Amino acid sequence: MSKVLIIGAGGVGGVVTHKCAQHPEVFSEILLASRNEAKCKVIAAQLDRPIQTAQVDADSVDDLVKLIESFKPDVLIHVALPYQDLTIMEACLKTGVPYLDTANYEHPDEAKFEYKEQWAFQDRYAEAGNMATLGCGFDPGMTNIYCAYAQKNLFDEIHRIDILDANGGDHGYPFATNFNPEINIREITAKGRYWEKGEWKETDPLAVKRKFDFDGIGEKDIYLLYHEELESLSQNIKGLERIRFWMTFSDKYITHLKVLENVGMTRIEPITVNGTEIAPLEFLKAVLPDPASLGPRTKGKTNIGIIADGIKDGKRRKVYIYNICDHEACYAEVQSQAISYTTGVPAVTGAMLMLEGIWKGAGVFNVEQLDPDPFMARIGEMGLPWQVVELDPDHDPLA
Ligand code: NDP
Image (cartoon, rainbow, N blue to C red):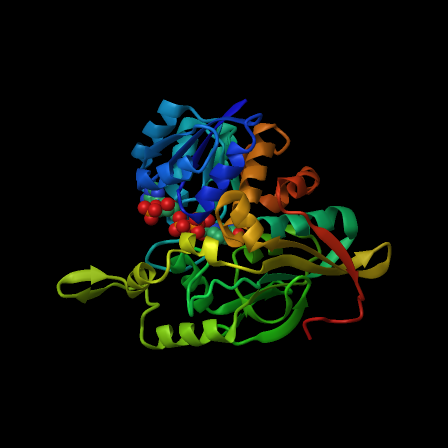
């Protein structure tokens, strides 16, 4: 019987709250807090058990500490924005509450995508005997755990990993992003980057394209992107020679994005309009459909997974581990589309393992540093079943 504090009442926060509410045997009390308490109340009204709600400014350590001290949670799940990672980690450290998030810290004025500032908490968390679990969504999160599972159970050595993220969903809008548009567009318009033999190789944004036939979705164009899990996985998977990340985008999506980029709408540096400072990307976010509104309109499936290529018992081996998730089924269950669902379910599963002392430790951990087996054993029944398919080691599906 434990108390959970959830910060952030957006798309992912909704899923996390629904999923915690489905498990009263673990989460006996739930407090959902966000910048705007009205959004928490909307989510609370969807549930069939009562939860508490609160207003909090997660940019303020003092505000967070006050809230944490009044509720006394056993774990905190942070699903507000990556801009709040450091303040929430600081507040958890001050109050001795275990911390879990789904995205690495980002500075509001600079898209950097790196763990440096969160890893800097390592010694202080270790000394305090507290635990921070970083990047426990789907990617990062589930994909890191697939890698750890492959390393532990399927390979003696993994040499190459490709992470493949496909969204076959259609919401009927000409252009909309499936999660926070600001975070999403910053990620996609950044340079592509992958890691090979100890070095980072850079590509122009969306310059490297392949085709891949996804189970449950069909053939899609995939683009090489930098994604934050590459940073920790390149350090934590032994013997790794190369790791890349790929995501699907439709031609329609790419065309809209290129136009928006060309006219300067994806820029994050503020401009002055009639005396008011505004970042074009923030303005764009305000005019695009709210990701939370896509849920009831989205049909189709996601397929996210990893291809690992390495050696087992002296022989080459290549496996594909993935989950297929149906947008409509997610909406029927928790009133959200699959992107938020696939992020929120691993976060809740990770928090459960922390509360149960199955995932434990003093310090700051990326999820692949924790035991993948109990997570993989539970994540199917939590809503994200997975499969392992053996591939021909001599065939390169991404050639
Ligand atoms: P949303 O924008 O839908 O929700 C973010 C929520 O955080 C909103 O309720 C927002 O409040 C709240 N918030 C923002 N700033 C503050 C603040 N200063 N204090 C308190 N609350 C605040 O985002 P998503 O739900 O789509 O994403 C949530 C997180 O999940 C993000 O960090 C995102 O990067 C991550 N993510 C991770 C994925 C993964 O697979 N690992 C995939 C998708 C997302 P308001 O409603 O007032 O704006």
